[in-house]
Image (tube, rainbow, N blue to C red; front, side, top):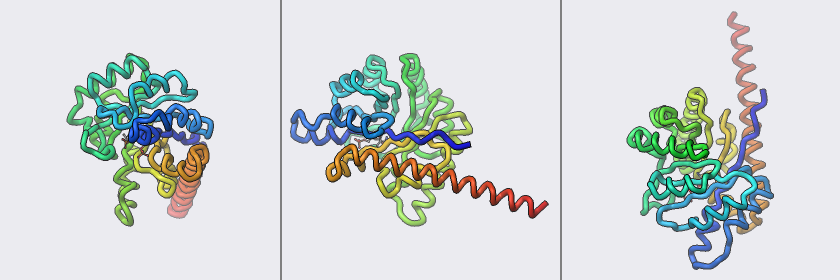
Length: 265
Ligand SMILES: CC(=O)[C@@H](O)[C@H](O)COP(=O)(O)O
Ligand SMILES: NCC(=O)COP(=O)(O)O
């Protein structure tokens, strides 16, 4: 059976990065979110960092009022962030690790190490009506812990894949595929994101069973040259093409295995 179409969540953090770099009112993340939705974004992702380097609390509250799709709010597991999420109640909350000195999110959440805190956070957010996702590296023990913690969704950190080249990229891609398969077997919904761009997105979208890709930096960067709507719709087209190619490849592999079995018997 044909899988449901893969979804694209557009991360608009870096619209706010540009605004904050001068303390102006522009460019406005709200305007970006609405344009992205018009271009086909299935959801809008924002990361409210503790240092407020880009998205501000005001953006979160205003976006909650104007979005036509769904908000995916990325936050660290701190009391301040948890209280805000419980108040705003975004459709999705993705719990992420955070370091002040990092340029961008460097690794996945350590669900094994912080199990009780993360399990309690999942319970609180679920009680507030949010669907919780945990941003994890493609590591079996982290995925198993995410399922035990009660998160219905994980987002696989694709940063290591995005940074790799040659054989290492092939290995990282295989890790993502194996992690997706394992998570699906545990009944989790599997999203993926970080560092995806116009040249590597198709291979990730081809992994069977992925639900949604969250992509920001590359889309906002391309928007400078082609406009945001074009940048979003091009990314969406590539994600869907990648998913389709993965589906065809899986069918061919299945047919090949059957032919092989027929010859053996
Ligand atoms: C958690 C994640 O991978 C990103 O969505 C995150 O938003 C990255 O943070 P910056 O946008 O600050 O790079
Ligand atoms: N969770 C990943 C995300 O939202 C976007 O990350 P990036 O494309 O800005 O690296």
